[in-house]
Image (cartoon, rainbow, N blue to C red; front, side, top):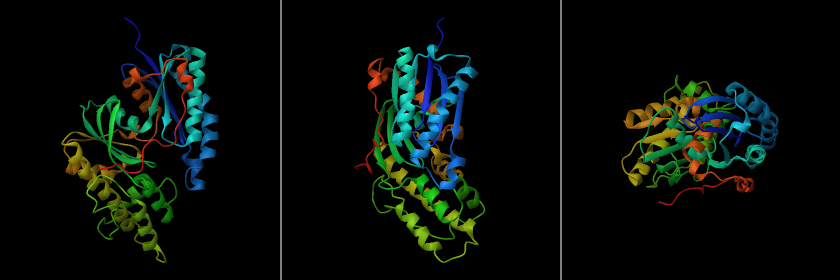
Length: 335
């Protein structure tokens, strides 16, 4: 009996450097991630050049640790999955060049991974979800709805026309003096507050489509707190979070009207938000959340996507011509 396929996943699209070794059966042999969160707190967010340099410094040590933990060698690889889009161009190129180097040395094919698709498909590592399903990606850089009919067939039903939900959380937290990253801080404080105490706007509320906008709610928060003390911070956080989650739930309804009734899969960093989970689970019996350990950018989801989309692998040496793309999804999908 032949050994299962061995897949290397490399994720460097933003600030997390993550490496994973996965079998063709979906078993994680080793997985390690270096987060730049503590270093980036002093900047209040991500600085692309700093992120790129840190990826460069951490990639090789992480790879060595993962191969050693799995008792494998790069020459044992059958396939490499690497995030090539979308994301910050410098960090993306760092990971892609690492993948190309290994490919050059051992003549290994590469799957170019759209990490937004990987955010959804990673759910299959722990749960079987039938196709088609409605995918909801909510993260610091992206918010969109997609009809997913196979691991390689994604139809965009709607997306943000400006800021992402995660960005609204992080920038809102910065305005409130909570630091970075702010999503979890707002979530935790909101548990002690009244979500209906204050009213913040829902972007594109009257548009009968699945497109989102979060720039207005941030401006509204800035105007609301101007000149005020923040003694009722839990109520402010709860109300602000309520507006963001309400926008996502409203636009999810429009996305379902376009897609038809089907299972819902929610992934991305904001999928960890407890209020979002509570609201959607109350309203949609067939909603499935990606496990929190797979929600932020990670190498496991990249290796898994390469496993599921292995037929799209680019053989050596053609894969050495791959390039990275910062953006691949337009702002807003047509109805």
